[in-house]
Image (cartoon, rainbow, N blue to C red):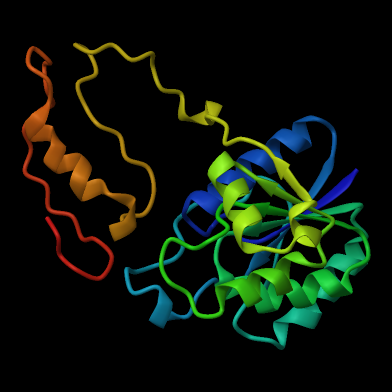
Length: 235
């Protein structure tokens, strides 16, 4: 099967790109032909004040950088690129209403089977016209894959039944590529935090809780941490 991925892939950093990469690689191992239809740019600088949106990674599977979601002239070019490749299935990475206009346009133009892989339904931070944008983006999809019960509930609470009936409940895997040793309390006294540091993720609460670990627990190495949270110094 020819499977197209629409959304961020390396060199874009972050959990959405990472998830798409792992899923695509597993599908490739199963014998499917994969193509990323990747972003040229992901966000304008105004929406991403924390620095570079890319890192030094490179895709391990074929990739075409065709879409800048906030530049409408790239939308028909993306449709043509996908149509020319003639996939059997398109998997669309979804996490913010910011992408709704681009995705909704593209999904209405391509003719193959379309699955939205929804990492979130309601965004973590307020977004104008969220429900309208969700309906526009999700309506042309054949299936909507959610990764948790909470996302499934958000879908049921906020979208009409015609969209809800497309939902499929999946799960978020533990990536084998992390290669973490089995946890041994004495040998591994630390905390791991994965992802970009933003206010809603609660890393500040996690670090403050360090002072309240249970009696008899070895605790964690004392370190002075200075972290830049989303737009403001918190710690």
